[in-house]
Length: 288
Image 1 (tube, one colour):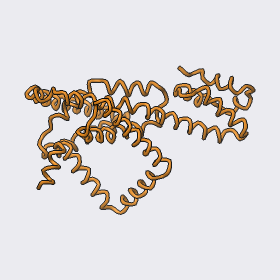
Image 2 (cartoon, helix red, strand yellow; image 1 turned 30 degrees about the vertical axis):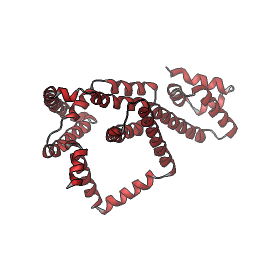
Image 3 (tube, one colour; image 1 turned 180 degrees about the vertical axis):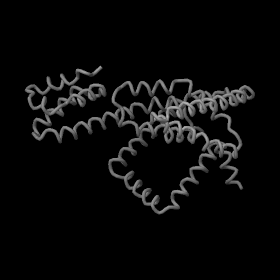
Image 4 (spheres, helix red, strand yellow; image 1 turned 30 degrees about the horizontal axis):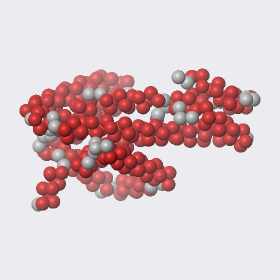
């Protein structure tokens, strides 16, 4: 009983519902032999040396960011759960999308999204929760709505469905927000306290500290992809190494320049080029 009481005190009804659904889903997956084999293969892929190194660096960066926030008084042990949820729910998906980064503007959009009022809305919605039975029904319902909307968005023939689901999500969202707003005004003295302010600021600080890691991860992946292509396109090792050296010196840490070089690099132009550095500079014609 004490363990159950401690568990319920540590996690909100929404977090308990999320955990229960996750355990149910995991149990269903483990019940099937084919799924168990797929999970084993997934685990083996995750512990591959390169991925293990990446996730190790991810963990070290997260620990370093938390240590920095702690040193300036913006973090203590009471924020551990919120921090873990942020890195699992936001940090990992962002790192997954790092390979899709093609310009600095992507990082700007990430930062602007974090600074929008959605942070406040998410904070208020997470502040008040329903009873556990309601949360157990609400979570899969909302997940289904977003899944159908995301799927219908990808196919033109489902445009009407996508529009309808968008309207449904908007209605549900405004309804939940209205409820939360009402409850917030009822208990404003408990809501607007210093710790609540820190809870609001924490996701933004974590994102700001995570963006450099995500950017340099994306930059490294872009260099790796380009140099693999260079290795297959050009067989003269000396000229190939010279090309890679000049690409590094010209692009440096600029993702826009690296993307322009990768987009415009062609085997024919390279073979006819005399001045390697000048050739690399001409590849920047689409860089902004």
